[in-house]
Length: 157
Image (cartoon, rainbow, N blue to C red; front, top):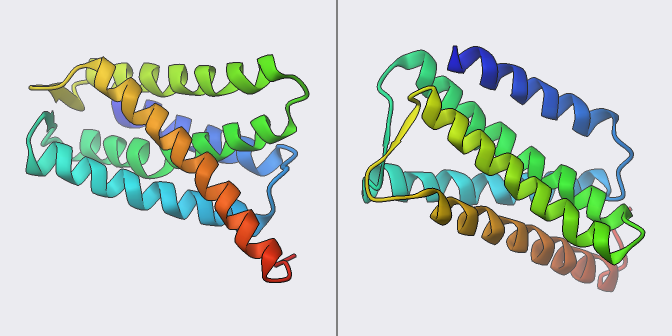
């Protein structure tokens, strides 16, 4: 069941990213997705495989669902929220959008635990909140730095 849910969610967030009005260019979106994907893969390798703080299922379908979450859903949700924040018109929206995004990611993490895709050993949900908040900060900073470098060099559009 976990595979079906996360497969659907991966397609849902991908479709939403495709149809939404974006404030970032294709190059910026691709750069941020790639950067977050690299960080997410390395982070999960260290936490899950290296330090064994979280145990991953050995069932092939559930493991594939975990890969959808780590490699598709997390980076795309971060790019969606970054596009929405850059379009926001008020400070309240700018603060609320990342909070909702972190809440969605934490809910999906809880859902992965519910479907027995992951099992916390020496970890808790609070660490996941900090991890997702850190990913948001990295996404903002990388977007800012990418734009600063690109515009200084004459643009990329």
